[in-house]
Amino acid sequence: MKLLRLLVCSLFCVVSLTSLAHAATSAELKAEVARDIDGMKKRIQVMNDTVFSFAELGFQETETSHYLTTLLEKEGFTITRGVGGMPTAWVASWGSGRPVISLGSDIDGIPQASQKPGVAYRAPLVEGGPGHGEGHNSGQPLNIAAALAVKRLMEREKISGTIRLWPGVAEELLGGKAFLVRAGVFKDVDVALFSHVDNNLGVSWGTAAGTGLVSVEYLFKGESAHSAAQPWKGRSALDAVELMNVGWNYRREHLRLAQRSHYVITNGGDQPNVVPSNASVWYYFRELDYAHIKELRAIGDAMAQGATLMTNTTVTARVLGSAWPQHFSKPVATAMDANIRAVGLPEWSDADQQLAKALQGELKAPITGLSIALKPMQGPTADEARTGGSDDIGDVSWNVPTVTLRYPANIPNLPGHNWANAIAMATPIAHKGVTAGAKVMAMTMIDLLTTPALVDDAWKYFREEQTKTEKYEPLIAESDQPIVTLNQKRMGEYRAELKKYYYDASKYDTYLEQLGITYPTVRVPAK
Image 1 (tube, rainbow, N blue to C red):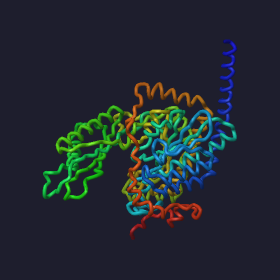
Image 2: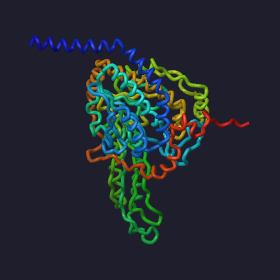
Image 3: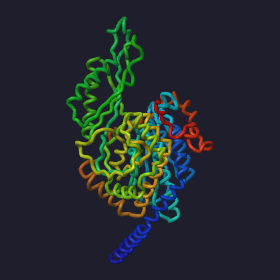
Image 4: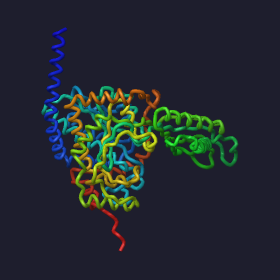
């Protein structure tokens, strides 16, 4: 027993000395990865602009996924494709041992957000086509640059650990991450570092400001008939859809103020002279916690059944997506915030600020230009202040310690999910913001690799505070599968035209050059 204690003590001392050795050089290691990322500025620009040019919608990110996985494979990463039953989902892995650091970012675009970059007014590349009106073209280039810089250092310094990268597929549909969780993508991960475009550089911990949701499509079935000759022989599925919507809108008055719910009619029938035998409506039910999300879904289900009783129709429902409310790790966020302070915001040029202010003026938004001051790290948001959007990174955050790095690749005061949000995303603004974010990401990875106590503290917070009283339960059922056909028809309509605008980095230094765009292009003031 005495010998065993001595062996344990010796092992602990070796580990401690190793940690101290790493800690003594961590500042040098961080400075090195930051310099390495500065040397990758051109590569970051090419990755960013190439993904921007693909402009693919959720579940149809085939060009994007092929491009990114091919790149990572050439860098020595092992690729697993088709993860979680989603053809465009993948995991790229390199290294061995612990810690296992998971890097994620979304890759899908927004419908009808096609837009020429660097042009401060509405100017679509493809009329009616999709585009990166959320800026999801930039996160994977950020993560890849950080991963490559840290990988090179780990190889040279013989630092153990595993780097994994993965895409947020169909995030705009909240359609992917719950299925990645179910597929076991995070079962052995120590810490997940997520990146998302923003107009400043920041991180938060604790309960985030947004909501969670379940996304449900109700498909009603009736019986067709001639609308003029014998309408009484028909049973209108469209009537059921409209009655459900009317009922829901009356019910809103008696729902909690925190809830957000909205719908679109995805099928309203074929033509007016035929009683619609099939019709469908797609709802988002948003709330602050799992229990209230489930309650909203139950109300929606009851409304749908009520509509069938009024119209003598039937209904089935399918889950199209889900997202838990987000909760982020305090220890990891604190470490990342220190790196944010060390990196700071990019130095914006006069041209960058001119584009930003011109676009803000075009949209009649406050003309503040680009962010020039960092914000304080944000802590937990009180329930009474929480509302708004959702992100399925919440599902990951309830399974493994997670933070989201927000990086300054876009312009403040924009509407979001809009063509205007695409304007900066293949310009120097995005390139500088992604480079700054990549440095913060790489430096935080160094913290996790060289400070085992940080990983321990992250799990202590996760177990003893975050999940002490609330445990993760999926909002998807075992029978639910990702609806990978979503957006298939829409992308089919536009892909051939979009291909004409794919970025050719072998011929053009920047995407702006390929498109013949002067940076910045703004409206000439009327004389």
